[in-house]
Amino acid sequence: MTAAWAVAGTCLVLWIGLLFFRGGFWRVAPRLDTPPGGFAHTDPQAPSQRTCSVATMIPARNEADILPQTLPTVVAQEYEGVFHVTLIDDQSTDATADIAQEAAKAAGRADRLTVLRGDPLPTGWAGKVWALAQGSKRGAPIDSDYLWFTDADIAYDAGVLRALVDKAESEELDLVSVMACLRVDSRWDRLLIPAFVYFFAKLYPFRFVGDPRRRTAGAAGGCVLVRRRALQEAGGLEAIRSALIDDCALGRLIKRHEGRIWLGFTKSVRSVRPYGSLRSIWDMVARSAYDQLQYSPLLVVGTVLGMMLLYAVAPLATLGGLVAAALGLPGAAWLALIGGMAWSLMTASFLPILDHHGAGRWIAIFLPVAGTLYTAMVLSSAWRHRTGRSGAWKGRTRGAGDATSA
Image 1 (cartoon, rainbow, N blue to C red):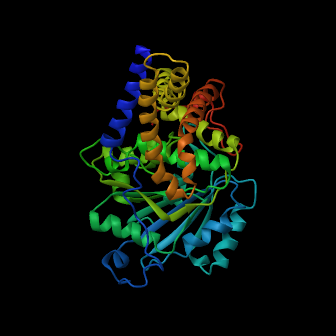
Image 2: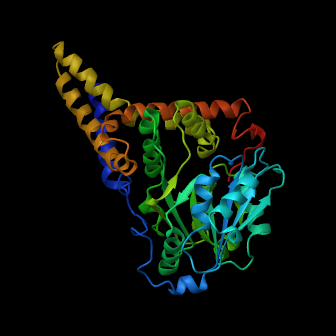
Image 3: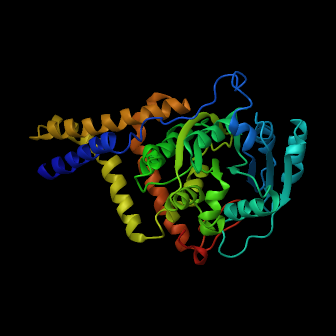
């Protein structure tokens, strides 16, 4: 029983430390939301609106079904400065290019869109980074002040671009990124999608990301505004060409070269991509989790042990302690109490993210289940790499031999 107390106590101490000393990762903050009704009440001739040009890049591979929902919200942004959108058709086998042009025309902003046919993926490049690099060089105004990288499945409120640029200009930031509010439909979505954001924020606490005194750096790839000059001085997209987790690699690149970055939450940016099933979420995570762990078996082992200590010990100690107490074993009630305290802290910390996604508070008690499943996804990612299926996405697979550190 003493050993069980020690393990459960360690779990409790870790949760206390995480909640009070990990940058408030569990809070939905900082935020960047556009005001209700857009920016009609603000000065449309603010300095950033007059002087800052923005070149928008959208990498798209087989996105014909989703672009009619998202592209109109990009090309129709309320932005008075020079603003142009380049969609890079990344070797699609569907009607992505035609649908994109039709969607922009339907929104009345066909003049803001250029569709660029992407070249085949060269060795050593990750697909998304290669598409963005082509758009930056071949499809964007060379003298644009900012590059706005957004995914094909992301929809926006009308004033988001203005808010991003104003944030960057007013605080002299080189990169501004917001975590899109992810779509939550099915029971698997409710359990795993908010948990994905929760784990991401624990790994990259947003307050730490924005603190120039800390090395923590990251970004949310669905929506990233980066100052062109800062990216060029840091080596350009070529410097992260092999990165599967390109957003965090970009954040590290900019911060490593003394750029100032900011990452926040928002309700004004939404992913419309449906997941729905365990398999679709599993594939999304397993595609790149091993890349996050730098292809290190030791880091995989450490991650598994850490996740089990944080997410499995508390419910096991609680339930096991209650059963042992019912059987009259000495010290069992204390074990249940320690485990219950850790589980309660874990549950409470999950509530703000659940509220943000509208997923239902009852899910919070099942965070240990989500943690266990994500641990299994990490192991699956390592196995896929070992069997040459690393980075599989939309019919394109990056083999084990292509993996390099970014």
